[in-house]
Image (cartoon, rainbow, N blue to C red; front, side, top):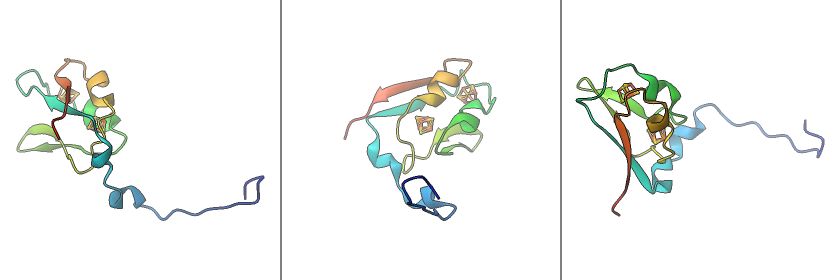
Length: 86
Ligand code: SF4
Ligand code: SF4
C-alpha cells in the first residue's frame, strides 16, 4: 500500500485493450531496403507493436503511439517518423 493509503492492482495485459494508436501524431515508416532485421525496434518498442510481417518489420498502427523510440534505436536509420495525415 502506498503512503497515501491508496492501492491499485492492474490486471496483466491491460495495454492490449488500450488502443494507443489514437494518440499518434507521427508514424514510423520503415525503409525495408536499409533494414538488416536486427529486431532492435521490436525489442525497444514500449508498446510491443513492431513485428515482422512477411519478413519485414512493420508497426501495428492500432497500438503504435508514434513515440519514435524505434527510429532512435535503429542502427541503420531505417525508420523515419513521418507526420501522419488524418
Ligand atoms: S531496428 Fe532498424 S534495422 Fe533493426 S529490424 Fe528494426 S528497422 Fe530493421
Ligand atoms: S513509434 Fe513508438 S510505439 Fe510506434 S513502433 Fe516505434 S517504438 Fe513502437
